[in-house]
Image 1 (cartoon, one colour):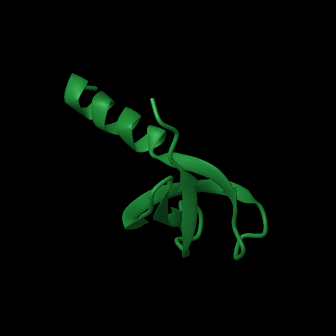
Image 2 (cartoon, one colour; image 1 turned 90 degrees about the vertical axis):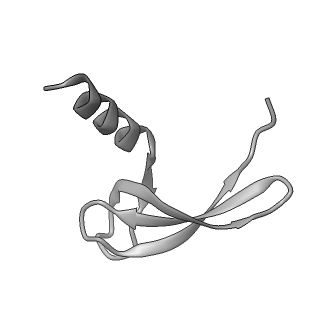
Amino acid sequence: MRDDELLFLQEQLEATELLACATCRQETLHAHVEVLERYAHATELLMECTACGTRRPWLQQDIPN
């Protein structure tokens, strides 16, 4: 595997979270699809289940550095 392919796969894995899926009825990896809204201390993301493909919004708290 080439370095750029490995880097791409690592970035994809880092952009996933283990969340409960309403369709699969279990905790599955969800990928960040897009940013829906940015607030002062949070970002609302569109998440997609990597098992069944259903999408839902997810609010992620922004932690200042």
